[in-house]
Length: 190
Image 1: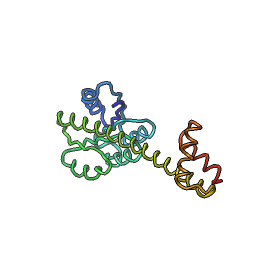
Image 2: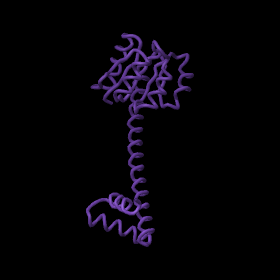
Image 3: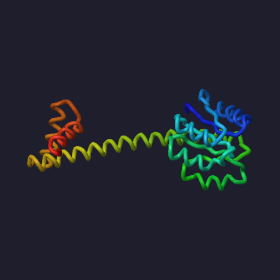
């Protein structure tokens, strides 16, 4: 956890949150805003690991802000809301992966919830990274298959011959099968 954005309407709440979060995440850099509009701008311009919103803000409640954070960044969102409406807010934001914590804050519960949120973010980023790797691999397979089809169509190769040709060219030219496949596609699919 490197950067946390705190959105709270009063300086008193900001300093209380910073003090508690410093205990949980020592060495983290904090930025603060007082409105939903400022929070949206900050999230759009910078990368934050987490956004902690002390609801309500002066210009909005915070549930819409959680949706914005979900759709526009990799930040986790934690909403601190009054106990009597926490279940309603949780129902609204659960699809956005936002954590809702009831106020007044229980110190131990807050600590565990924040640690859980940080762990969930790490897990999410790991899954996202793996997804990107798999998408690249899938694109490579599609490109190689397109190249094999071009070799089969234009040179009369069998699938095994086309596959062997691409592999041999990659070894001989000391490049990847993807690079060979792109050259074949460029040559035959103009």
